Length: 467
Image (cartoon, rainbow, N blue to C red; front, side):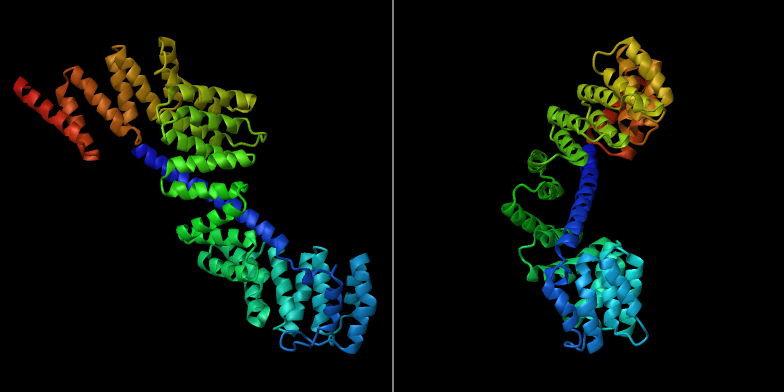
């Protein structure tokens, strides 16, 4: 049970991290694309006209344009914006002077931003803000620029200023929430997404962002309810099924975890992480064939970029769960999958795993000899030493078995199990003093009633024999 608990803890952390990372990436991309209202598009003729005509109407948040500047923009710049924005930018840049309205710097900054010229765009927007610090649209453009440049922390003060100046909407609150997510500020992220949803309650992207924030701020019940609502609307979303699986995993409800993951892998091409988790869950449920099937599917994915360490992890799980035949099969598939791409160390790890398993599945002296050779390659492989000790003990090679158990007991993970086997073997050899000393050490490591009873009887036997 302790082994399963450790595996569950590792699975929870690993899968929740990967799932939330994917959710965060997808949410961020989608928010950046979808939270660009039409009113801020050059393709909108109303926007182009308002770009010129609205300056100075809201005097607190917009700078004024002179009548000459309005005529210049309407007659010279706006006609070029769609057909030749680069020329439009050059014309605006040539018009700039010390007396120019901050609005012209803002317009040039936006033209450059549309052409993805981040640094020049930033310089002009900063100039506009230096001349008119409460220029709301310039703050919005600066925030969008920093989001596009992945400078999320630098976008935050601009989004806050937009909101303070009366520009709160789904875009400003939504991308503020995403920026807080990137910075690991979960609670303000959740509050920002909640505000954004007030403006666009139907947005799945905003609700995904809120789910991410709630999970990270340990508000799992609220997050689970929202995921369930999202699934009711769209039951074909694999990311949401993975999230639901993560909630079940947190509750250690393994059957429901497996069911949710199975739905996720049926809906869309599964990720290696999903299949690895599914295999781990089935292993913990005592369903080795289903576990093996999940692990095998990883090696059948079209991507050839699966990291060897990730792909080898199921071997370790199968070995530690004592699923010897499944470990042999998967190790063989792993070797076939990587083929000549395996380096010598990786090849040796696979072969050592197979040798360990074969010591329990139709072992032969040749297998034992191979395993013995790999103990020299991997002197800290406690399970390999333990398996070799078991084989040697059964074949009455007592001294060799004792040595193998001692080498296994030198590893932290197998210290208890190996010392218990060693003590039992010493008892069969009537080496009671050594056995008693080992059992007492075991009781100090982890007290066990059965071991205590065995130790007491052994001490009585020692007394009665006068030794």
